Length: 262
Image 1 (spheres, one colour):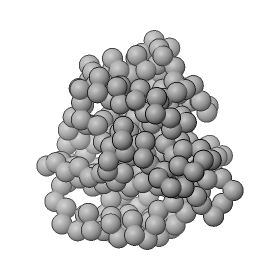
Image 2 (spheres, rainbow, N blue to C red; image 1 turned 120 degrees about the vertical axis):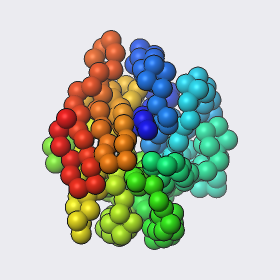
Image 3 (cartoon, rainbow, N blue to C red; image 1 turned 90 degrees about the vertical axis):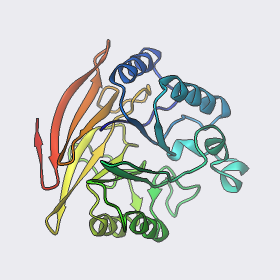
Image 4 (cartoon, rainbow, N blue to C red; image 1 turned 30 degrees about the horizontal axis):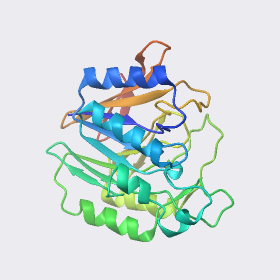
């Protein structure tokens, strides 16, 4: 099974040449699923969401999307009364979708919040209720690969000093261990990286994607990830925009017990 992982599309602030290149690459690669891990829009306007919907439809591929902090309205009444109304209308009714196949079982979690006990409401949170939902989702799972998708990263890259607070992070990490999640996909930082965490003989790979199409770059070009699964392993290609096309910059193979460069 082949899955494309794109994040931080930021419709309303995109590079036209980059999105054309991404579109061509995805249509040519024909992944079985496109995962969009939040920040579909820049400012959560109806027009940005319409543009995003048009783009998703143009791929003619199944899309698994979750919202990010930019998909909430700004400081207006809508943010506090019905913050995900535009996202639900244009992108997906379900903010925490689930996908099952013979190879992968994927659960999405919405980490974006209308308000947080912190000065920066762009940060995220995972609630105790969401931890319980994750347990319920994977209680009877039989797929070889268990995946969780959220917008805000659980782990921060050592080489990128941008701390992103995910409230209830430690309880969430314990839940990931208990559910024996194999991969956690996220975005938000516009910085691609991987980190492996081992617990009780099980390895969880945290996979972050750069911004796929936004002009708002941080140290890295635009990029996305392509995952190719077998029952025993997954090859992850981390692609970057070269100015003319998306090309694989690095790759690794992850099994249930380790990850190694490919």
